[in-house]
Length: 354
Image (cartoon, rainbow, N blue to C red; front, top):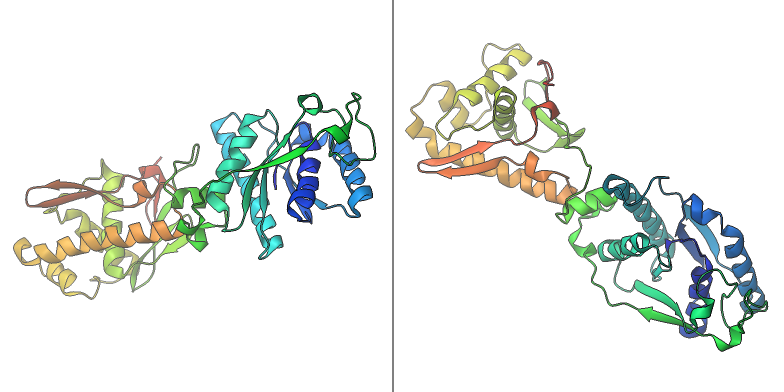
């Protein structure tokens, strides 16, 4: 699989060389081809036709359409990455246990070559190959009608194809696939986020809180439920309320946002009193001295950060740094802040912040 550049000949060269040099049969070509590349499909068909006349078979062709925008634009490049990811995922699924060859055959279009190399470094399995395709005579580079030495038709510029060889240069490149959780393999964005890459143009997620029952608040991130206990969800809601009201920093000894969260859930439940069924929250409702609950509060804060970091990593959440509360250490404890923009926070029963 790979990006099809303005000259499709290297794709046929690769299919022939895999057969002639490695004894492999390319059963299907998974190609990312924009409108410019598709203008030269007749040359690809000609080359594959000549290959079939020599070896008795021709690979199927599966085409994925990238966005018709310049890939040089950072935001557009993300859409190209997503198209390549879908193409490679389809190739891997179709190959089963057989290897997938990632071909660098886009010619002088360096952005395509770099994109396929990056794709390999992220998604390739053990046994998959990253291969550059080269010819031994520069006179047949470009659109010259050369496809492989044994082709039955002459080249367009008179160069004898029998005097030209096709070389496969296998590149040793690492792959980070083992570091990507299975749930994050569905898209390039999710995989990039799981690896800690910054994704250009990606909007921060929507963090929403609802109170569907008397059990307490439920948090979702872009519609996906965040698995938090009622106690952790209540503290998360407190941070969200504080962020909507200002810079979001909540001091270690400031219980006002937590009490505001308890009041909000109480009102949504229609109960005279509501709190998570834990000793800490029972003590808060009973207005116990801060020194009596200080250690339990610290643990609650630590547990939320740990739970969110673990969940974000497992699900490849982009902008996890905005979703996991930030910590500002100081004497006597640590302040926490939800850095997500207030406009990306939705709390049931409260108007959105614009």
